[in-house]
Amino acid sequence: MCNSLIQVEVIIPTQTKYLDLIGSIGERIAKELDKFSGDREALAYHLNLVLTEATVNAIKHGTQTNPNDTVRITIHIRENELNIKVYDHGQGFDLESVPLPDFEHPQEGGMGIFFIRTLMDSVTYTRQGDCNVLEIIKYLS
Image (cartoon, rainbow, N blue to C red; front, side, top):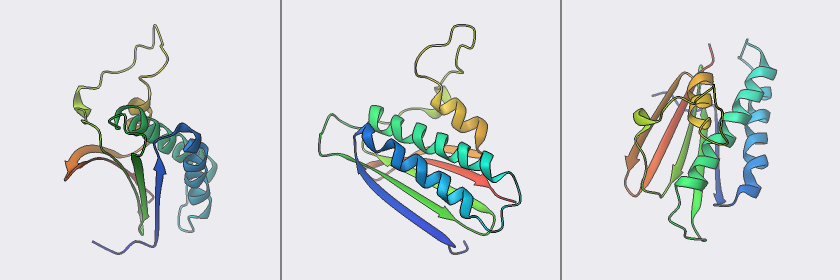
């Protein structure tokens, strides 16, 4: 595996007031990608949305009601790949069993995983030690 060109790691308390910070990190990264030849504004918007949604899910579903719990987000940018990992300490869930949203009768919530899967190239969810890890990959070439 090649080394990362840029690495960002953020650890936040499980509080939604930090969502703007996480989203803006995604936007800034998209705008700084030298070798990305696609639409930077669209990528910036997509990364903001994906990072925000993934972090919301980790805060909402990934904590065991421990006020001292944290969510860890890592972003590694390599030559032609952006890799995001969101770590939480909850019970986890089965990514494959998440239903598609009901577009006929939209409800609040339930769209995050759909957006992440639609906008990114690969989404996996695994258990590593005492953490759940949502791994999101976007190919940049």
